[in-house]
Length: 172
Image (tube, rainbow, N blue to C red; front, side):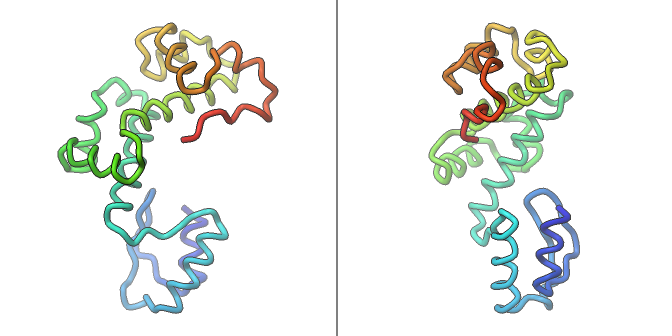
């Protein structure tokens, strides 16, 4: 968030608040030149400004899914109920908007995020696959392994044998 704040400041736009995927600004500091400078600064940092409300909703859905996957306490809750609670919208509406913009379902995105988390935990080499399955909300090691192979094309054991530089197998 510090990099995003810096981009706004460089563009001369006053930031009132900043959180994951959302920045509230002082409207009186917005100018066409400032927005152009902001876009260039954000792109240089690997970000982009979303003007479309549907794009912004999809980004909020992604942030909520990542929060759901990464929070151990919430990882046991139903994802659709979690998204409804976080975004204050019916899941059906969220799902339609997400699928229309992303070309995949929220469920597929959720699975990809869980597999990414599994890959991260495996890279630390501190937990067994059973412990990783429990921590990431899988009902069993077999379920984790099936989903992992469906997403990456490899079993967890095969994945762990790859050289570190070749481990990016899943487009999130």
